[in-house]
Length: 281
View 1 (spheres, rainbow, N blue to C red):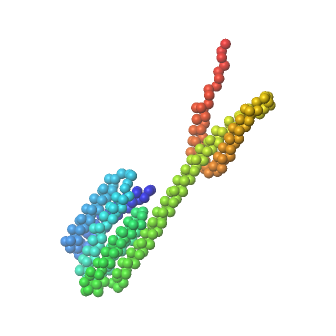
View 2: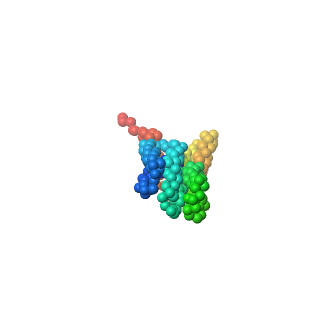
View 3: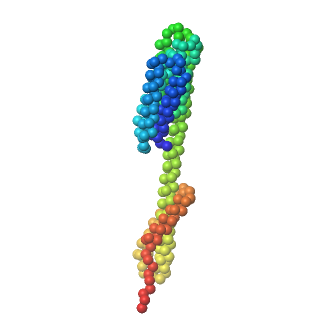
């Protein structure tokens, strides 16, 4: 799968998770949610659902730029919802563990991010940076109720998410290198098969010319010029055989090799002159 297809899949998975996560948020936080949060949840489901349908309607080849843009777009309502959820929980309970949705989102994005550093880093920072900024906008009486360690907890989650993203991107790079190596190997095998086919096609003429040359040399010693030319032609054919011989080791013979041999035999049959028929008296 190429990078464009990977980006398309990442955007589709993110949109699907956006629909499911928002639906779970509606159920889980219905009691504490206000009008603004409920409206935003409906908007989030609409945006993520529309993006998911649009992505499913696309056909290859996919646009990597468009997929990355959709990937970031569907995260916007989720970022705002995580902030509103924390405010709702803070207003309706005496103690709560803050920033849980943002932490979970940062780690999830590190795993499903598309190929390329920029999109993944932007997505993670959307949650971490907005949460840190929001932390310092809390009123003092709410900030005092936040569990100890914040906002360093969300910052630590962001760092861990970036580390996971690094491993993810390294995996993309290694897979691309393996694909390039595999393509080079296949190309080398094709070249080797052609080279061996050419060498095989030169063997029979080489043997025939050598036999004819010896016959001429023994029967008609008055043709040194023709024999010299024939000797030079034979030397060229021998050089061609020596040049192509090392490529034989690069071939893994399988059904494709057998198919190539059949094609060579068919080509020989097509170019071979028809046998002479005896004339009837």
